[in-house]
Image (cartoon, rainbow, N blue to C red; front, side, top):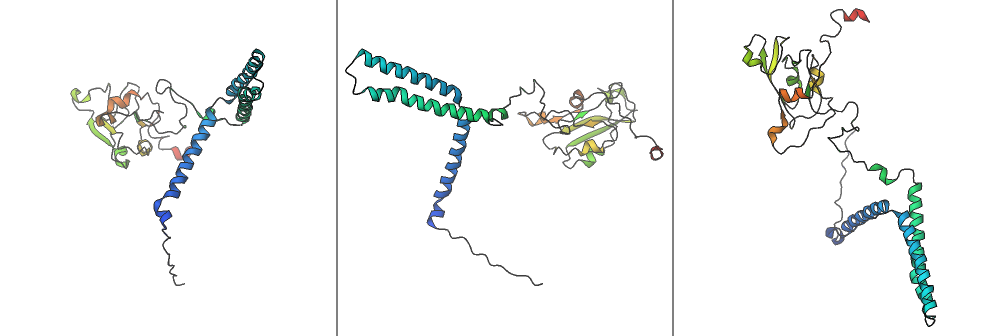
Amino acid sequence: MPGRTVKLSPPDRTPAVQSYALEVGKGLGITLEHFFRNWFARVPWLGVGIVALVVAVCGVAAAFGMKAASGKMTSGFTGLLVMFGGVPAGLGVVALVAGAYRKLRTTPAETYLRIVPYPDVPADYYPPRYRGEHRLMHREDGSVRCVSCMMCTTVCPADCINIVAGDAADPPSNKKGVPGIEAEKFPVRFEIDELRCVVCGFCVEACPCDAIRMDSNVHVTAYADRKDFVFDRSRLMERGERSIAVPGGFGPGWRRLG
C-alpha cells in the first residue's frame, strides 16, 4: 500500500494569540483557583463561625442597649441592628456550613500534611525495596566481605565504583583497617561516587559475596563539597553489619536438592 502524504497547515497566529493575553489569563485563573482552594482548606471555619455568632449576639445587645440609653435613635436602630447583628450572624452561618462540610469530607486536606524530624527519627515512608545509601557488609571477624572480584565495577553503568585490590600475602601496612583476611583478595580502596551513581542496584545483584547492599533506607545527604559524596571503605562499613550469607549457594549438588 503506497504511503499517503498529509499536508498540515500552520495554525492561525492572530494578534490575540501573539499577545498571549488569553494564556496569561488562564494561568492567573489556575493560580487563583489553587490559592482559594488551599486557603479554604486551612481556615478554621467552625471557630470563625462561632466567633461571628458571638459577635452578632453582642452587636444585637449593644444596639438594644444604645436604643434604651437614647430614645432618639429610633430612625437608625434598624441600620445598627443589621450592621452589628445581621451581617456577623450571616457570616457565622456561612462559616459553620463551610466547617461542617469540610469535617464531613472523607479525606480532609490536613491528613496529607505530615512532618518527620529526619534524620533524628528514621523515615517510615520508604518502600521495602528502596535503594538507599550503599554499605559494605562484615565477616565474623569484622573484616569486609568484599573479595575484589570487580563484578560491581564491571556491571556499573555509571562507572562510579573504584576498587583497588590487595592480596592476603601483602605486608601488614597494606591491610590497614582490615582486622583479618579470610579471602585471597580484599579491597585496599573501595570508593563510590554517589553523585555519579544512578541508583540502579546492579552492583548489589552482581555481588557474589553479599558484600555490598543498598538496603540502608537512608537517602544520600546533601553536602556543600563534592568530595563528601565520595564514600570510602571505612564510611561504607560504618553502616554495614555482619552478614551470614553463604557464598556459592547450596553447593555443587544444588540441582539434586529440588
